[in-house]
Every structure is written in structure tokens, then in C-alpha cells.
Length: 167
Image 1 (tube, rainbow, N blue to C red):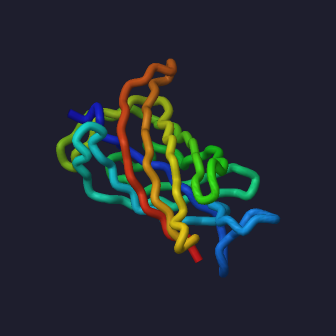
Image 2: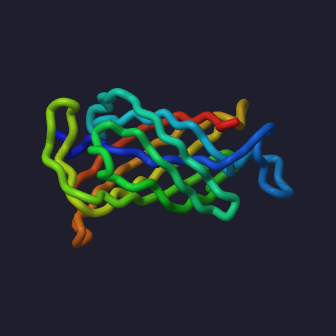
């Protein structure tokens, strides 16, 4: 049942105040800064959505990213913060990959609905598009993969997100 449900999302963002951030010598928007992100896990096959949760992501000007999430499917202390990298793919499009450690295993639960998690790594890969009319808003599509300590893929999922620049 939970094999195709994404069970965590990355945190994208970086500190920014005031006007939209632009690349040096460019007039196109960048992810550089911190973003408040609303994440919705979706069934990869049917598109059925689960209740949203919040993340906070910071995109560094050096192409690094860090973040945190309040995804309630994880037990307290079970998942570390996100760390990863990002790069520009087109004028207002970006690609990001981050990982977090799953520090201990837990069985599946029905309330709240959560799959079994295995100690290992969660990898989130997302394609992000900044709104061309508003450089302080983005949408993203993500795939989420969970690997056990031996590097075996044990769970996959999908997610959609919207972000607003934290100002």
C-alpha cells in the first residue's frame, strides 16, 4: 500500500531579504535564499494526495542546500535534516538532490498512516520551477527513495510542493 507513497520531502531554501535574488550578471531569478515549502505526498500511480506538511529549505549561492521538515510520518528523532546540492537547468528551472539519514527503523502504522521505515538514507530528487511572474514563488515535483544501510532501495514515493521565499 505504501510502496508508491512518498514519505518525506526535502527542504529547499536560503536566507534572503528584500528583492528577489538574481545570479550575478543575470536578470533571471535564482533559488538562492530560504523558502517556506508546503509539501504534499502523492501516490505515484494515481496522484492521490495526502495531507500537506511544512519544510524549510535553504539554497546556498555555492550550489548547496539544507533543510528541515515537520513530516509527521517520522517518529521524533528518526530523521536528520536534509543536505544536498542544486543547479540551474533553464532560465527559471532548477534541479536539486538532497539526502537525510533515517536513524532507526519503525514498523508501519495506521494512525497516522505511515509506511515501515528502515534505518538508512532518504534521497529526494526534485525539479523546481520559479514562477516567471513572481520570482518569490516556486513549484516542484519530487521523487523520494529510501535505501537501507546496505544501499538497497526499499521504498519509493512522489511529492509535489510549493515554496514561498522567506522574507
